[in-house]
Structure formats: C-alpha cells, structure tokens
Length: 338
Image 1 (cartoon, rainbow, N blue to C red):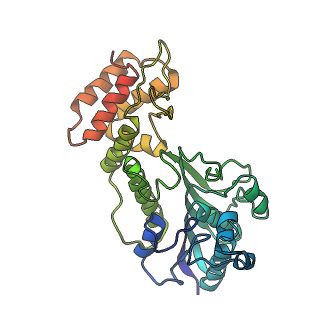
Image 2 (cartoon, one colour):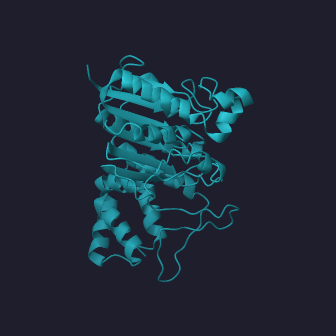
C-alpha cells in the first residue's frame, strides 16, 4: 500500500514539539495520524531527542554541541518512510533540523521530496564541517522537486552562520528559492523580538502555503493575503529603518543605507527578497518598477515612469498605512521625487 504524502518536521538544536516555534506549531496543526501521515523529530540536545551512543556516555550536551544528534533523527525519519512507503515526502526544518532534512532527502533518492528550510546551520564551521563530512549537505539530488530556504540577514554569529545549500554545483533540485529576511537566527521561526515580529509572521505563512500546496493536510490559520504580506514587509522595513539616516551622495543611488550615530552601523535593504518584490508589485506596480529601476541603474527613472509612480502613490488606499509610509520613505530616500 502506497500512501500519498508523508510530512517530516525537524526541530532546531535544543527545541522539540513543546517549543513555541513554527516547527512545533505545524506539527500540532497537521491532520492525520502521527507516525503514519506525519512525524516530528526533536532537535539535537533537547530533552526529547534520541542520543547517540557517545552522547549517552559523555552527556546530553555533546550531541547538541557537535550536532551528532542530527543522525538519530535522520535515521528515525528514514525508518518511518520505509514503513509508510509514501509517494512523496515533505520536510520542514530549522537550524540543525534543516540540515537533518537535507540529509534525509539525500538518503531517499527514489522518492520525490519537497523541502522548506529555515536558516540551515551545521554549527562551528571548522569542527562541525569536519565531523559531518560524511553527509555532504550540498548534495541535493533530482528527487528534490521544490526547495525553499529562508536565511536571516543578521545571523552572523560564528557558530550560527546559515549554510547556503544552493552554493554547490551538486544542487539538482527541480526548483530552488532563497529568501533573505532581516533578523537574527530564528527570527522567521518564532518572535525573537518585537522589531522582527513581522518576519516570523511571514515565515509562518509562507511555510503553510508551501505545505498545503504540496499535499500536507494542514489545519491552523489561513495564510496571509497579498495586502497582509505587503503590510508585514513594510512594517518590518520601517521597524529596522528607525534611527537610520541616509542621504544618497550626489549621483549615487544604491540598495544600502548606512546608519549614522549607531554603534552597529546598520545596513538597510530596500527589498528583502523576491517574494517581497512580488507582493509589492501586485500592490503598487508603478512604484515597484520605479524603485527597481533606480536600484539597478543608479539613476532617476524616466519622467514618464516617475509621473505614473507618483500618480499611483497618490491614489493608493489609506487602508495600508505601513505600505504607504514605506513607499513614501523609500522614494524619498532615493530622491526620486525631488
């Protein structure tokens, strides 16, 4: 007997099904029987995680620090897939859980897989890359039909630097999508701070869209509308732009805003990712085109396009206050209407 879709959720380091993050919430929202229609693996080092033999001898933190706790989770997933015999497997993971998803899919060459990954992290770039050389996560086979990765722009910690699975030449996935988002490691998985709250809302909605589109029977909240996405992205941009002073130097327009009077020397991006551009284009196509032209050419748009963009901005509804403020501030930053 072959069932349709089996869904696997892989938690991040020290997280499990009782955590307040999107991985745990998705498991609770998934219909069907646990172990037959879906499963969830605890992250390395969590209280619920299966330990490696050496981890049992040296203590629970060993699997967490080294990441070796990913292997029992991957083996548990492979055993479940062999037992259930699905026609397709959906995998969702965060941090080291995302790496577990990549390893699991690599070991299922004959089964179509769809992966949605948040901030894939191996760990310490020196120690853990050596430890996990037997499981090259850059190798993505043709059995991976859809691969979406969200990476946090501010996850620059030495240990928690996100891994980009698209960087290797061995990526044979049918469709790949990399979406960058502001915030530290995990900001799209749970609310790490009020400033980045829209990132977690967007991440939760995008992964729910992905799972429903690929056959996972998922309850829970409806996904965001186009206008809600636009407001969330705009709010996120406005949140991180506070206190950032930027005036383009003469003749130079770029996608960077350098913070002045800030200890962190923040860098501000006008667009965070392709999805941001996509939903904004549905809301304000003339303004989006004008801003994109300005970024690419570093020149002010043609007067005809500027006139259309300015007219569109004047006609937009006040029901989208964050989007309106974002568009006005962004165009002002680039001196488009001066």
